[in-house]
Amino acid sequence: MPRFFVPITIEDLKSKIQPFLDKADCGDNNVRYLSKSIEKDLSKVEFDFENCDLDGSEFGGEWCGYHTLDNGLTFLGVKAGGDWELPIFFVVYWDGKNLRAYIPEEGNPWNTTTKQAFGNDADADYENVKKRWPEIIGDRQPEDMYGPPDVDFDADAAFKDIKDRILPKS
Image 1 (cartoon, rainbow, N blue to C red):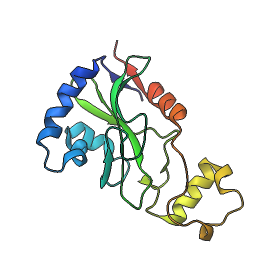
Image 2 (tube, one colour):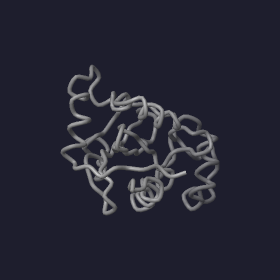
Image 3 (cartoon, rainbow, N blue to C red):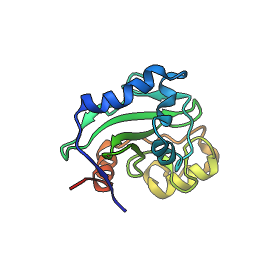
């Protein structure tokens, strides 16, 4: 089922987000509490906010920060995860009434079976990577993997997912 966005400038989106971040006790970690809608949207995947990157400085993500896609979707790109987890990428956008969040499945390394960040269940992570990215597993066995699997964020696949799911409101 598609979601919808209303075009907004980067400055207008910042004006909706920044005041909250400025007064938040825990800084960037509170991005999940920007709205009840965001809190609900992000609860679909379990991950920690111990490390939260809003500008690409922590995880080096060029898609962190404020951007506008060619379809008009303006968003705040965020990566977050605990020290033991692979960070999850998500976007915060304006639907015309509320700030919303979306976690793309495609290109975004998280366990789609357990609905958790990679790093929380080694055996389940192995099986999920084997299903989604068999070329990464090769002939390795679960006992050969230490820590979260080494899966890279694929921006092309993630943004195709985002553009297919979040459509301009007519």
